[in-house]
Length: 210
Image 1 (cartoon, rainbow, N blue to C red):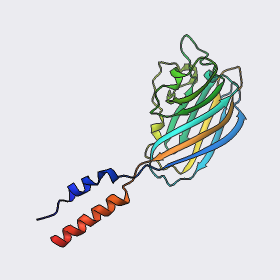
Image 2: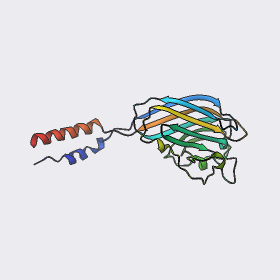
Image 3: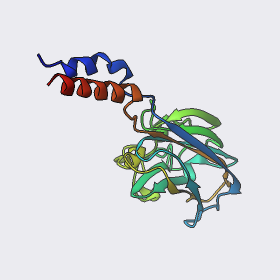
Image 4: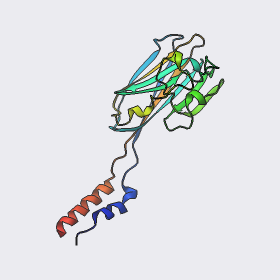
């Protein structure tokens, strides 16, 4: 009688995958974003990691001193492109957008609220938000605009290489300072050593009994 390999492996399913690996790096900038300028501020950093297949990307932004509703920001790496901010708070009724002057937020696709509609109208803000994801001219970005450019665009890519954060202040007024930004990358879980050894042992036993 041949051994039942599949049930043996399924019985070990709690050990089937080890915890996904995660790498994070913070980049200190402390540089003003040019006011009312499409040139903006671009920061390119080389990221080194053992992660060769991305399952999730989060971005933390820390800014101060300006008007959040003026901001347009995106992240690129390889073929990936995500719009982080696109005039947050901007609606037909509030064309100037959110007047928040201090930001310390983490952008993640699985957060509860869209940063464009979830951000307050003034003061300071912290916490987790979905990226804006509105891939359009900042002059036309509104709360009801379609959202297509999420951080999931990086899924499956190798984390290694150059990542670029671009931030522009596209309206006249206060000047925002980009204090720092943090890139956190999670890798696709890999089969655990336990599972691989169990599968190998089952195959060896099958051959001996064949």
